[in-house]
Structure formats: C-alpha cells, structure tokens
Image 1 (cartoon, rainbow, N blue to C red):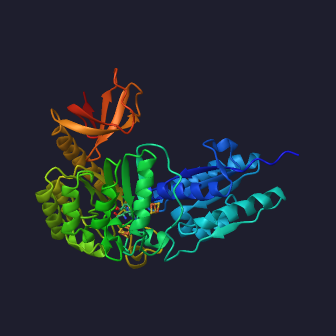
Image 2: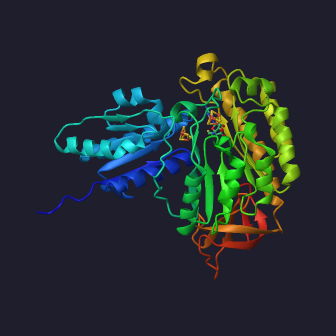
Image 3: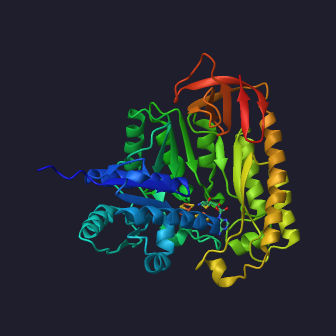
Amino acid sequence: MTQKPPPQVHIETFGCQMNESDSELVRSMLKQEGFTFTPDRERADVVLVNTCAIRENAHNKIYAHLSELKGLKNQRPLVVGVLGCMAQNLKNELADKEPLVDILAGPDAYRQLPRLLSRALETQEQGFDQKGFALDLSEYETYEGVLPDRDSGVNAWITVMRGCDNFCSFCVVPYTRGRERSRSPEAVLTEARDAAARGFKQITLLGQNVNSYRHEDWDFAKLIRAVADTSGIDRVRFTSPHPKDFPPALIDAIATHPTICKHIHLPLQAGSDRILGLMERTYTAKDYLALVEHIRAVIPEIVLTTDIICGFCSESDEEFHDTRRMVEQVQFDSAYIFKYSERKNTIAARKFADDVPDRVKGSRVSTLVEIQRRITLERNRRYIGRDVEILVEGDATRSSTQGMGKTDGNITVVWDKGADPFEPGTVVTKRIFEASAATLYGE
Ligand code: SAH
Ligand code: SF4
Ligand code: F3S
C-alpha cells in the first residue's frame, strides 16, 4: 500500500515585515508537523494568505486575491486559511460572510495551525466543510522555541517584540496584534547567531514599536548593540521605532557601532500639533524637530525616512501646510505618504468624523509626494562622485545584466555587472555617477 503524500501548503504574505517574519514562523511550525511547502499555488492542498488591515486598500487587495482563490476551489478540494491582521480584525465578516474561508488564525494563534489544518483536510476528505478559528490574542505569546524557516537572501528578520500599546488613534495594530511583549535577549541572540551561521549577512530587528523593547534591565539600545556584536553579521537594521522612545543611548549605539546601519525610519505622521494631539502621538512638531536635530548632530550622515498621513479627521488646509513645511524643513531622504483610511473600532473611528473629502486627501498626498520626490532626488544626488559601500542583494529587478544592492542607509544602488558578478551577501564599493529619486547608479 502506498502512503499518502504529505499535504502541500502555499503561503502568500501581504503587509509589513512583521508579517514576512510571522510567515517564516508559520512555515517552521507546519514543517515540524510534516506539512510540505510549494511555491506553486496550483498544486497546493492548502493556501494560506497572511493579511494586512492597515488601510482600506490593503483590505481590497486581499479581497481581490481571495476571489481568485474561489476559482481554484471550485475546480478541486482546497483548504483556504486567512491569517494575520485582517483575520483578527474582520473575524465576523470573514467567518460568516465568506464561504471560501475554512480557517481564520490571528497573529498570536499560529501554534494552533497544524491542528486546524489537519482537521480541515480530514473533514474535507470526508465530504463536508467545517470552519476552524483561532483568534485569541495573548499577552505572552512570542513563539519562543520556534526557529523561523527563513526566506533565502541576505537579510534575516528577527522579531524582538510583538504587539503595540501606543493606540495612536488612527491605527488598527493594537487591536490586531494585542499588547506589547518582548522576547528575552538570550532568545534574540541565539537567533542572531543561528542566522549568521546560516550565512545571512544582515539582521533586521522587528517590532511594531521596536524601541520600546524591554526585558529586565535590557532596553533596545543594549539589545541592538549585543546583536550587532554577532560575528559574521555585517549590518543590523531595525524597524519601526516611535519617536517617543528614542533615548541618547540608542542614538549613541547607532553612531558608534560599526555594524548598526546609519538609517532611521522615524514616522512623523503629521506636522500640526493639533493633529498630532488628535492622533495621540504624544509628541509635538517641536519635539520631533529637536530629536532630528540631535540625531543629525551626533550622526551627520544619517539617512532619515518617515511615514506621513494626509487628510486625518478635521485636518485643515493650514494644518496640512504645517506638515508640508515640516517635510521641507526636515529634508527626509524618503517618505511613505498615505491617505488617511478610517479603520473600524479605532479611537479615531469612534470619536471623530472622517470628514476630509477623498479628493482633498488625494491632492494633499500628490502635493507631498511631489515635494518629497524633489527632496529625495536632491539628497540622492549628493552621492554622485562618492564611493559607497554596498551589500549585494542580487540582480536588479529590471535587468539581469545589472547587479543590485543597498547602501548602509538603505538606498538602492544598481550597476552593470560586466565581468564582476558579485555574490549576494558580499560588500563592494562603487563610485556613484548618477542618481534618480529611487536609485543610485554605481560604476
Ligand atoms: N508601528 C509602526 C507603524 C505601522 S503602520 C510605527 O508606528 O511606526 C505603518 C504606517 O501606516 C504608519 O506609520 C502610518 O503612517 C500608516 N497608517 C497606519 N494606520 C493608518 C490609517 N488608518 N490610515 C492611513 N495610514 C495609516
Ligand atoms: Fe500603530 Fe501607533 Fe502602534 Fe505604530 S505606534 S503600530 S502607528 S498604534
Ligand atoms: Fe498590516 Fe498588521 Fe503589519 S495591519 S502593517 S500586517 S501589523
């Protein structure tokens, strides 16, 4: 008698780096229980979609994706599981109204996936569908003891804390990922050493609020220094910090430790104090500028990037101009600029009207994008004629005759490979001869 082949799982990941990192944990836990993975959706017995809920367009993208799966499921037996923030946030909508979905599992419940999947496959084989849900948020779950099954490449994600207690009024994350909890430094450092032993050259420390990391007498500055001491690791990055938790010790660590990258992603969100207050960001424009000034005084070569929301509840033209002035004043190296998107059950959705017309939000975004594009281009052009160190990642997306890598500041560089096809993971020096707002060109 031939044995049944193990079920094949295909996983697709949307959203932030945290979701990328979680998908690596899910893969690890499922492989341990005998599941195999396939990059080919057409051959899978199970399709898992790890979802994001941060803005309406993230939702729409995932709904569009799920309707593609409907076609597949009509042709053959298929178990569909929705994981991540949207599963947590839309449990009622997805559970009741979406017949396609067999399994819903939130970010703290992935240890239950092997059991849920086995049961779903079994019941499907017996000819009936039974839905399985695992949606409890936990104050403790950090997936201790699960070594992620990492995507290949030069970068290893290491989640150091989970959840968020900030409750910025616009944001759904505290509801989808629950309360803050930090992993032990030993667990983080063991993972860092393991990543180095497997040949990863870069580590990115992750947390929704990464710099509020705390474990006994360890804070984030102490943790990142210890990770950066891991031998074999060339670069350490982190994302995302909150401006409220940026002590001098952290700035000092970035300034002085040779393997900590001189790049800070420092979400601003808005430039008006009244709007920052409504957003419950806990800093003023002046506080933010003082922090930037301090960072630049200690680390003049720092690359600063940010996130901005346009058209938050009741934002006036004048208040938008405050954001615009702030962007011109700070001179970020780049920025992600979003239209405010109301999320159900958040503080803003309960307390304020989403009253800036979509057209106005859109035109504010375009204005800022254009200003920032000009600033990014000017800042990138400063590299022309300079030699920069690049960590090679592989081929450029547009052409296999070009190599692609990142500067310490996380700016993309491409160059003609010619006779020098550097291996991913090597650090090379290139002279920059041209720059666009997205890319530096090296020779
Ligand atoms: N924890 C991270 C942010 C995660 S979300 C941090 O605090 O830095 C990434 C970005 O999405 C946020 O910085 C914010 O700019 C944007 N964002 C979050 N909620 C949003 C919403 N409701 N509408 C529009 N943009 C939003
Ligand atoms: Fe959301 Fe604010 Fe937490 Fe970031 S810090 S995840 S924006 S609540
Ligand atoms: Fe999206 Fe959840 Fe990340 S809402 S941005 S996947 S924390």
